[in-house]
Length: 350
Image (tube, rainbow, N blue to C red; front, side, top):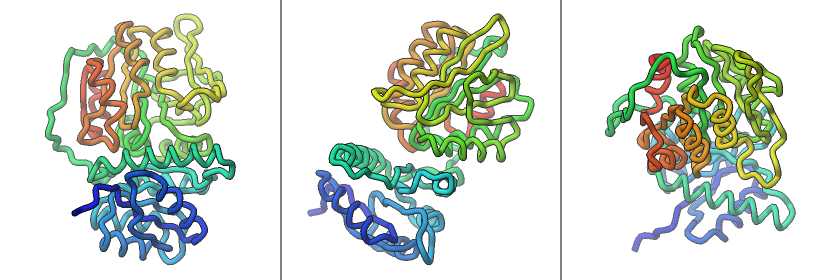
């Protein structure tokens, strides 16, 4: 009889870390560690032989690094890959490379030494493993197809004159999805853009730099007091909350505050969307992208109640159809689009 457990392959060059991670995974009901590898080449071989449901992958390894291993595995037999990396600037850049190559998500290698931190890390690890295992195929930037089974849904016509701001929220799978959208926008894009993605503080500067280098519009990590300007995308810094204050009829300022320890998402799509619902009312076009959970749902509800529009990413092109599904199921999505059509749709809408 075949096992119904989620089969996990652990890849890391540190025998100590592999042992520690395997011990954590062994305590998660419904998860089975089926193998381990100490470098990228052995990871590729083990993936071919064992066909795991999820792979945990180190970034820096001898012989073949994790990024190269991800490329080989996604080309050979696409698998849900969870990157485990240090939250340094170099680690952030390497992890973003791995996500671009097709990895589904990432976590810090620092699981904490205290019992409480260890238990919390185990819960997060379990959530990611179970969520990623639900999808047999994880789309990457290079593998997203233009054809989708479900045609885009349009519930109401849009007016090119009604929008004053674009707001985008994302989580798991968000970095690649955002890259797909923002790099498709022209340099003369006429509206400011606010972007909220669930990322730690050490990752958002590197992510903003990467997006800016690849895009025609200007993209930067938001700072307190930044002005909203046409063709400028501001990325909420990790560990903070981003809101907007309007000064006079034409000046809007970004406000960045340290997140409260009790807040689940730092930054939170709901907090940013809700701020915009109060400031801009019907002038916002909000887009909810791939991600686990339902962050953005309540903010989208407020935006809709004030006359703004909400779009969501379709299930076929999502890494995790959590956040967009919550918005769509609530009847808040004016349009449901595949990720590779959102950028061009934004250009036409504004």
